[in-house]
Length: 311
Image 1 (cartoon, one colour):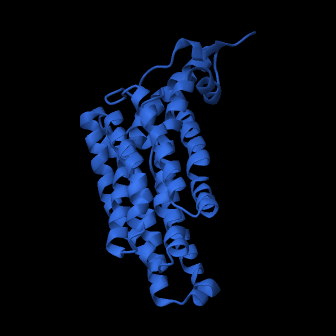
Image 2 (spheres, helix red, strand yellow):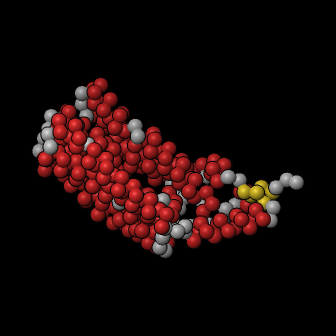
Image 3 (cartoon, rainbow, N blue to C red):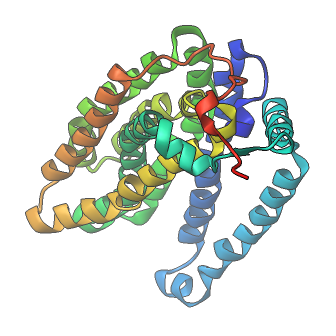
């Protein structure tokens, strides 16, 4: 996240940093496309017998490509400069606190802000894409192809529009674009399931596409937004800590919570309330967060981060 946020100048950081974000719908587009193709040419029995191995094996190719990209990309100039400064301070007898310790000591606000910004985005994504499959096939008793094709269409639009949201955040700010998505998602949480209940494929596809469009407004500026909350020396630790905690309590649990709510109440209303609450958490966080657009990534850490070595 921090690495790609360092690409380009400060005026276009949101746009360039949003491209790795577009990898999520890009991957979902590939995965859903393969599953939709298999669903069209295979029976359920054939898929369970051997068809599931096809996307599993294809994913190995993407792992190799991702590894090649990661080892080929050099570190950002800001990081290299911070590392050189840390090495010089260490040679001078000054011991640096571990980045995680420094984040917990002086960067708690950034970590909590990153968690809040990601909650609504994480929950909404997995409800719109993963839980959708359960709702359409089990609750509405529609073919799984309808759900897969709806996600396929929505992911295509999602992939194209995420960089546009990132570019817009360069013009009007990270907070403003995030609020467009979170406030919109809080309302869409109720309209979404009402449209799914129409059992019309074009309406279902439109509902998923509109939902992912709103999700993109939260997701597009996110890499730049979170990276800009931290100084270079602790950026990776701070951004990772906030992002991964949100992924655990938000995205990882969202489909499970949604399924249990549907099972317990037999209605989509509790799921809508859950989705709305998550979006409102992100809304409240964005309202109180500091705007980071235009902030330099080469800020020097405070002197308190250094501790003299005792003889």
